[in-house]
Length: 146
Image 1 (spheres, rainbow, N blue to C red):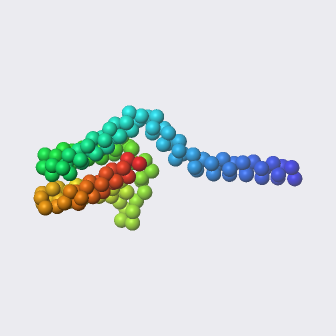
Image 2: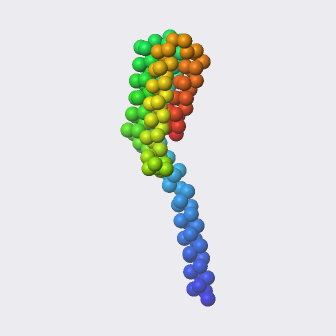
């Protein structure tokens, strides 16, 4: 009888440890990633700051030079996020078509950049419309970086 109770107690403790382990790896890997790439996070924050600054320039000037500089910064951000594994963490799930979520996010960013280019080329587009498009791109970049 005591062996049965001891065995049951051990099984409950083992189940509790297994349950706790299911929660811990996510936090553990986030901390590990932050410790492994502390400068990477700072670099990404700096790129976002530069993107904001360039977005303000683009909204006011609406020139192809500022647009190209903005696009280069976006591509740098995406390249670093994917290259350093920041965007790949916990994004290995696939959609109904079997594509990875990270690719879908990058495709959305690319689509928004194409639309932004079209908007800049059409001079009559309002600054509010450009601001909205830039906001959508920034939201996707933040989602990619999260």
